[in-house]
Length: 64
Image 1: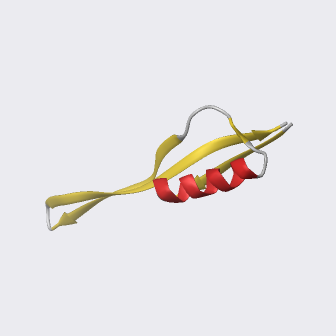
Image 2: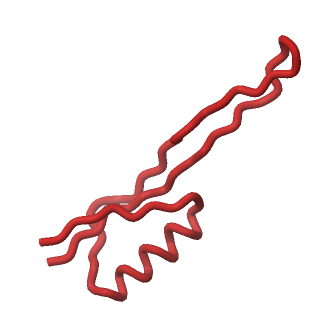
């Protein structure tokens, strides 16, 4: 059995990668995951303006 994790920076990129692998005989294993890879609070002087999040979308695949 083979195992791999595909990931992308957007839901559409992950969808494209998963679809390509499903056509090549890979199967889904579990559900997709969404994690924050990097988080940065942005300030102007002493006042916080917003938070920038770098998000990663991933899906585990197996091939029997």
